[in-house]
Image (cartoon, rainbow, N blue to C red; front, side, top):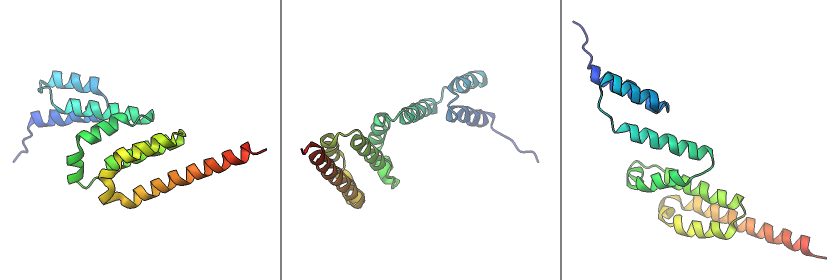
Length: 145
């Protein structure tokens, strides 16, 4: 009794592997050579690799856009990815010294996570408060005669 493999499924799995690794040219060539239809997963893997490249460059915007577009799916899975990304963006603004912009960002983006991540939001707001106080204190010290 031999095992029968569906060659179409095997070819799809191989192509998906190439796309997952970011080898889209190889994946496209394999799809064409194996005569597998242009699969929808190509776009998803392309988007994923674009987002990863942007994250490496410290640009959170593409990931935030993706997370917002998939908000409901992420919520159903119990994922805190979207909240994590907003937290990183907030911290990035703090590191850039944009305290007012960070506060405005928090007001605009943290409210929808209040029910599930209130403790985290309170810690972030506390860090903003302490940073503003520390900065004001040091400005006063350095500007005193």
